[in-house]
Image (tube, rainbow, N blue to C red; front, side):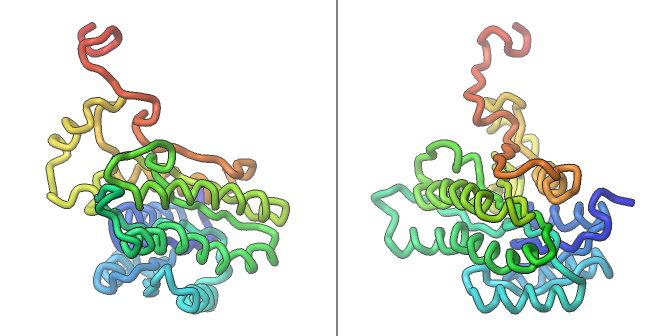
Length: 259
């Protein structure tokens, strides 16, 4: 019996990257998953890989009617929703002066409004059953500033606030809400040049663990929060960043390798 045996989860942005790693881990731990994404081919391929425990349903997280359809279809196929991982997100590198209103609204639409719509879509069913776990994926850039990421960082800070409010409003109804804050993770979104893990680790040498993270390491945090082992964890911010938010690691200073 796995940690998530008998549970049904919707994982947005589930076709690749952290979302795909999360789908794989949830199935490995006994859950049935809905791979919710706009990427038809990648989503269908992952569902075929995972077998009867997974279904791909196309979802534009910014579309409220699409959310209602996906939740209804998921419940009809797999059963009541026990967990939602609001993982879908987009990244944009632009300074404040370069960012247009349309740029800003597009990023917030996916990264923040999409998570709000997800919460609204699953909350009523969870409340009716008196149980459920919602995991909102934010970022270390929702814990600190990041130049060149004004839209992205703003959206991820917004996810923190959304999570806190949802935790206040839904906790007494049996629904736990928490946020996960990944640091640098080796996925297509952050490693679009397909650099080697060795080269990426060098780029992250000023992080205390001195390496980039793997998508499966973030997936593990979401799986824990979806499980009954996290039954008293609510409104928390789980940072999965190799120590990035602790501070900058300076080579050659006391406590560094060889010192």
